Length: 286
Image 1 (cartoon, rainbow, N blue to C red):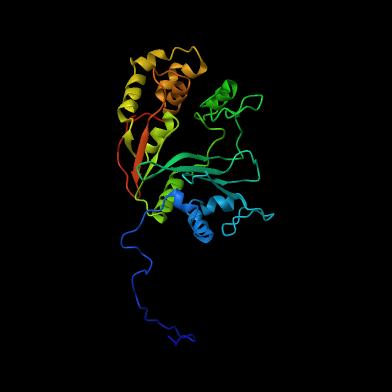
Image 2 (tube, one colour):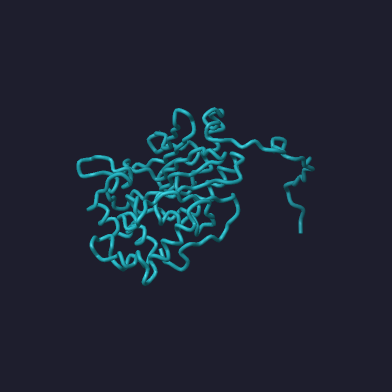
């Protein structure tokens, strides 16, 4: 075999620890985030934006602009800096972002994810977030557009959903954990707005800080012969007996007020890179 015409050089590298790796990292909170240099904020935001999602919807993964040069990412924060939100926009239907995340600093020196949604703008929209006169329902928590909710339920959606998702929940959780690692946060909390959200988080490795017994009572109530199963009397479309058999169906019944108490006070936590088994509805299909 002849000698190759191109010479390959092997460089001797001086391997040293990363000079910026902190021995005792100071956690960065949302109230600090807004004071970081814009370049640092920009880099951290990239952790939350799946590249394949950007490319799929015509957004440049480096500049975050669409084909017309418009920036498709919005950030917002409360005046005190304790709440921070990110929205990834789309061109197909500007009413709903592709991705929306809202976080808050907590009183226990953690950050909580208080809202997380992923929307497929190509799918039908159900106006559960507003009344026919345009009045806001606050995601169905304050007022309800019953006709839209029935249509959404029949289409396979869960409470709070205006569209189908994009099947990126697991990927997005991994990105969120990378974001928290960048903020030097080992743990984070979630405060699910609906029953199905809590079950979804527990099935992705979160454990309950508050509300575990409440969730177990709900599960037992929907089992055959349970009090909640008996209340599924068909008096409304959200109280069909078959709804006891799925997480999504149970969530609609709870949203319809089937409990004796309000849906409130459920909180879960997760340590980044770790999963814990803390199931309250084992074996119940989605």
